[in-house]
Image 1 (spheres, rainbow, N blue to C red):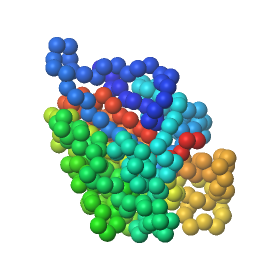
Image 2 (cartoon, one colour):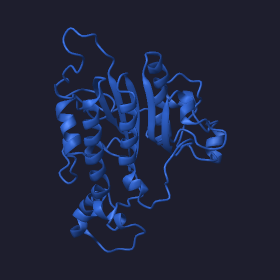
Image 3 (cartoon, rainbow, N blue to C red):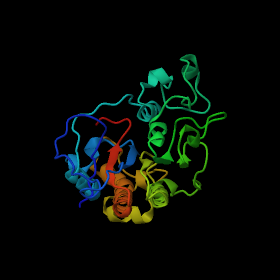
Length: 294
């Protein structure tokens, strides 16, 4: 039985075949699906091979799109980071939650004047709380950005059984490593794999919310090596930024690819391999991006 995967972005028409049933064997009781929600940061749909990009190599994401669902009509609740994440988690418009902009600590004068909250209200009903009532084990690994200042709840207070986050409170990683961001997707996937193994006999819901490919573009030497022939020695604080940074710059696209491609190849392959061995049927890997429509 092949492992079906849902494709890219969170809404709209489907232009690929519907994924096959990944439930239990014929005659066996149906089991709830395991769910992994991968949310990238500042990745446009046109950055992927399955949407026609010929510079950035994303073979495993392209395979997931080919074997699952590929969405071609896109709608987001907000073009800004924190509001869109709040909408994903609660199913409510960000304005109802009073999250109007990216949450900073402390909030700026404009945000304060608009009555913006410094964190999402943990008493608002959210997806993981609903899933837990159905017996799901729930985890969040990666970027949070829904409130991490003084007085903000930890992500665990929103119904997650396990968390490890950046841009939030609670358990995290050693982010002092200058290459932490470049390696961060692998670390998040490792946490997710461990959680799946711990909960292999029950349904699970996991957020893997990456920091990539959001700046700072500082790939490791290993990630950058395939693109060294494109190097342009200009003054920049990080090797991955040494290119003419314009929206249509092919050189910049390939520098960016060094930062993004390695992590998606490694992370999606490891997650897929582990999930295919889990006893809980995996029916959905959903990949989306909170802000960029282009």
